[in-house]
Length: 427
Image (tube, rainbow, N blue to C red):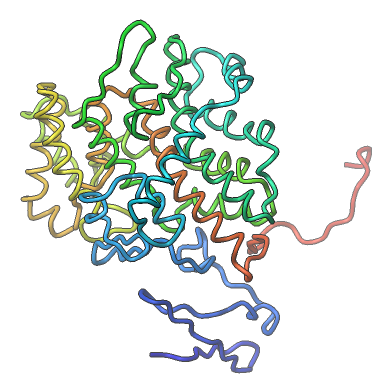
């Protein structure tokens, strides 16, 4: 193990300590680098920079490993529930039966929105994107819940965390209802977290809604698989906003805005659009050949991953979920047949195996969400709903960190040097 790394700067050797986490790569501590050398490091996208210390989630992209508080994502998705994973991320340990019951009861009793907030939806156009509505409504929560915005108070932080996790399904379902012109459906405290969301999304006041347990399980798994993913763009945005002392509701709205970007939260929608473009199974070989052609701009969406250079561990779980759901719903859409056959062909094609272009979680989640009945405009909304748990846990961890400072990235300036001002008449 390396204890220090030495840099040569300005003719002098500077030694910097190497930090070692519980698992993962070592980290060079360069906090004093600028003070001692007068130089900054240059790292666009911060892909080689550890911005914080965290005990929540660990990813090993080369080995295809994703751990939440040390627990493999596959085991959590197979044996746990989204509420249990939420408790784990927030508190660091899996709950006892009594602790889980108390936590679920607390979340359930926070699911309703302030009635005046419900009227806020009517300020949006009917054709507004649900993510636009989510950004606005979540940001507006701070105008309604003043009793939980003191970030220095642990009780306030706990209450606001529970409120955000509890109210996000209600906010998301209402955004969908508003976009299709149907009345809002209020929460039902007798249902599970995920079952309640399905009812608020697809139920109508005119008839009783029966939650399909297979659909409920599939969606709950999707929530688990998207709960947290280390220091990704939206999580880093939440932390950066929170570092200024902003209230938690504003921080979550910032995270939602970042997630909305197609390079982040829109990947599952892109994968589904690709399947629609392929259309029928007989066209798959043609598109696979196009994907192999370096001169063809076409790319197979939902294959490979920026972090995972091996198989995405979340995709393994979704393979099983897709088949369970298709069987239950008796899916016959040719697009779904394309998904299954494309998966099989890519997994057995030497080109994709060599390039490690395996199906990722986005390839499957878009297919599952579409089969359940969600339009593509809701895909990123569901991502935000699930990721709220991770954002809240990361935000709490940041606030409690004694080393936390306001975020202030540096830059490599390439603009003009100092110039003298010339009045408008002389230009």
